[in-house]
Image 1 (cartoon, rainbow, N blue to C red):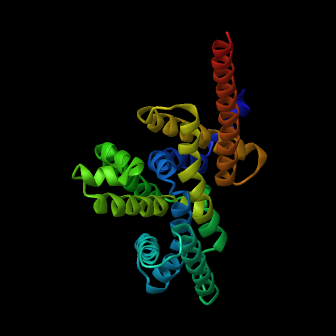
Image 2: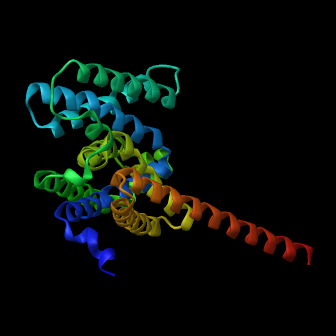
Image 3: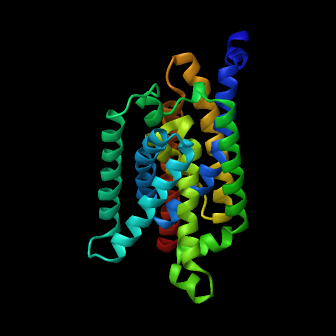
Length: 282
């Protein structure tokens, strides 16, 4: 029994649990809108594009959060501009922009001397988060959560039908770029914990799981938050005993839950179809 509570006896593990609980809120809330809007690749693009911003911020000796946010917004704005002014589809433009910026970041990183290991930037270092990282993540999480919950109806209509949202008088442009800003901020908040590459998992999987478990958007938000909190706790907890990195373990737990939700949704669909066929044939 004592072995089960062993992880909670270490300060670095408690910080990891706390960090995961903090970043679970903004990532899961945003994931619901990204899934509904079909912006999964946008989250992937921004998460990769922050690398050159982080490196440039280090070179200029300014807070990394400023460089990461600026790079993320540059990626989002340039993607929108290129897709609106060319015949190339948006997903193609996003793939080109984020891969180009990610490559640029890697080239910059190889040209500087730093004690910061690239693995910590790419995959995070949840077991080594500092109190400053916790405060930064908590501030961003609170801001994102307040904005989303306050404007959840506007964001929902914009995700389902931007034309209708504009017709009823909503500021579609503000909603569009506001959502992009929230994505960039959230990726910055998760940078120290799960890194650039794994951040996309937290921005997609919770919303996808919630989408499979319910047909009501009002229920998607709490389900996504609950799933992320559960996956975060289990992932960090399991990683202690199997001696693995917490961030990828959390993503594996989320993947397992998604597979289970997918199987459940298919079974429910088949039962509903079978019931309808029996009524029709009867």
